[in-house]
Length: 202
Image (cartoon, rainbow, N blue to C red; front, side, top):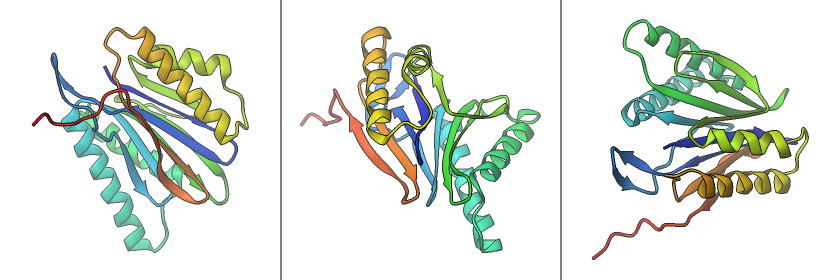
């Protein structure tokens, strides 16, 4: 029951994802990081089949790094989103990946941006987006409380509202969430929201 959502604020973009690795009725772990740092100023948050998610996001990460290595300049966020969409579209006709992606980034010229890419290679630039069962609740919360030009404090408060709504409304809600942010200072982990520790019993 995956939950991935994100939004764009004043000079930054934030993405949040649950950290549960689940198969059938089993929870394997509660600290799985589903938000990959693509490069210094890009984040890629993914939901979907675990194998597809890990393999495809690593493939995109390495190809973005290869482009920068070959050409001496990094891809813009828009270019990385279009490349990702192109790879999903190519795979769709051969061996499709069941992966939904929110790609967030920051560019000096254009500022922060967020791209919605689903498993059938639909690409949209958005100010807020979500995937998974949690999207039913997070999208409604963002529709109510989101506005352009939010501060970091306002955005984190909205993310916390979305997490609380998911935890209280979704019948099999994931307990833990990870929040990451990208702005002019780069992409980085911002905070965890944990209700279950992933300690192994002795």
